[in-house]
Length: 211
DNA sequence: CTCCCGATAT
DNA sequence: ATATCAGGAG
Image (tube, rainbow, N blue to C red; front, side, top):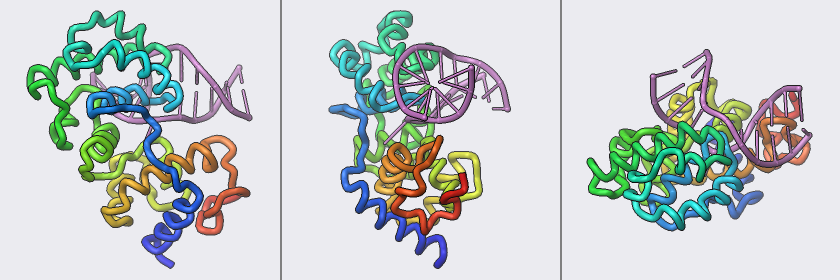
């Protein structure tokens, strides 16, 4: 069986195991999702959701981020880590949204990736989940790790991994693939001590039991 | 490539 | 103690 057939079997098995696989970040509009996704870098959805619960009551409009004192914003997001960079990105991003995008979150890859702190991963998450627009596959640390272990790619660069996956999987499954890999990566195919014994697709994985 | 960085699991 | 967590910029 070639890789295209193998990945279809993988998706089938993962869908059965994780029928609830979908984004775990809490948000009610594109701005909230954009902010939550930026905060999620090298953090967990659990921590981000805890932070945004308070954050989204205090910051409702882009102007609220654009006008805030940087130190205060840093303090509000501190527990997500990388808080100085993230605060700087959020404020500059909000200023750009006000100045160049009429205070709205844009809905195209080109426009989103112009924003400070937003590259393809964040843009893909916002486009697909907030706007229903599929332009690519969100390759985060989990998608990267699983794609490599399953040998669906030989690349290291997330953008190249995204390209390989896009050629391997039909567009209608791009979103689901990302969600399934993230769920499975958190629960079973963990970075440390992956649970190959309990993994539903260990027969399809070249790396199974090799850790 | 390095740097950013607190919270959590092992 | 240390690796890792829904990354991106310089």
